[in-house]
Length: 287
Image (cartoon, rainbow, N blue to C red):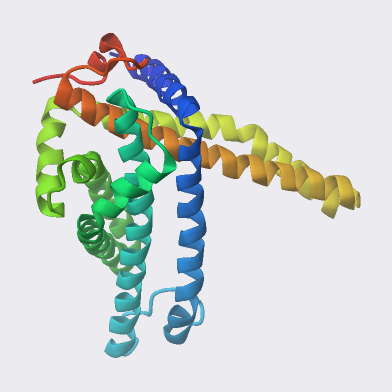
């Protein structure tokens, strides 16, 4: 398949994910809860970061060693809590989506139940993810130009190898290292197609968001230059709300796709959904 064929396949995958989301619209609340929780976490960590760096940037290598250690310790804890929150609500979406793919009718309570059942695994994965995130941040901070390139490449590899970790945690209940190992092994069956699809989701939603950025820009223009305060605020607010809603939908669809990919690799088919065999065969290439 060419790149554009893959994007077309991704569009169809988005349609299949959207079809499932329409059956379980309550799944949209999970990324909303996740975003609110992450904002609260960020607000909680503002003071510790301010204590060590008033500009909220890493201390220089010339700074006292204790300041550097304290900064990265706080950053690590921040990563752990954030990853825990994001993984928890992602696990809720994936668990509910898998239940739908198995022919059942999930509820929000089912999503919370799936996530609550795997709290220890989610915490373990949050610690592993935070450790990797901190290492990548250290690489980037120590050599900004080269470090950013290296960290970006390593981050892409990490994203690819860990793509199926959360469905594995939810369904199989294994530890984070075992889940990562299984995710990497399953990757060999899919030839990296899930990364292309995930990238395609981002590309498609980027273009969908462009009119909303224009709407927000129009609101700023009316407020700042045209001195039309009320219509400017209205345009700005509508654009921001729609942009947030679009982000919530994107998060949900990507989580549903993760669930579908895992179920298809494990079961070989997903009956009763638009994730038909031809579509998934174009996504999964067995080696």
